[in-house]
Image (cartoon, rainbow, N blue to C red; front, side, top):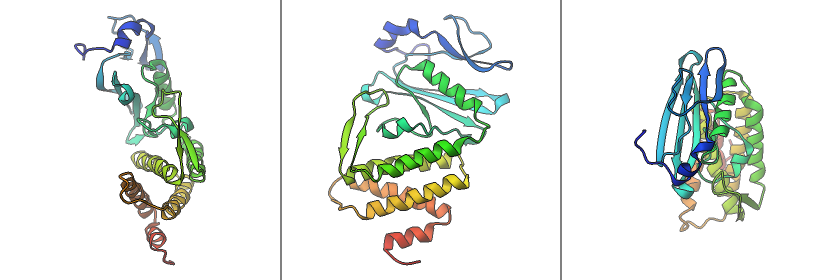
Length: 261
């Protein structure tokens, strides 16, 4: 990786990125300034500004944690900066509400930050790892689900294309709102599957959200020549899979066919 090209931004600003992600048995995960060229045993990851797609895995065996850092710098709106944290066989999810209104490269399954925000990413990683063994999912998940449910009641929403953009774009009309909400529901259901979430309260809230989404799609006036319409099929499929996996398959079928159970 040392031979890779770096972005112009990194060449001009590299000096301000001095904190690295470190780990020791005594201190756990922490950040510290590590001089360039130094490679102490505690050093886990040093910030970089490499151009293009980079993926690195960090393992902490005695904590049963694996951290995957993913970057794609120097590609404009396609750039991203994130990490995935795995605790044993379970993914740690991030239900930060601000991410709900970001269109691209933002998922509940990853810790996402604006590009080159290394200090913030390391902070998020440390918090996620320190709370990995604590069952604190329910409150944040329900708040996220409630926000998604409220979104389905709106006629317009304001969306950012990427997490580090300041300006928002208005998505106006029931079709666009339902389309965007479906994208986020799809992402959330995928994340919950990866994370092996089985909390009955969370599952109950999601089931209600799925019911609401089905009815929202059914009441749309659809243009089947619109290339975006096919996305609704994919989103409904994820809802179908979730409901079938949680004893709601018959209810899904009855709602789609307008038949009484």
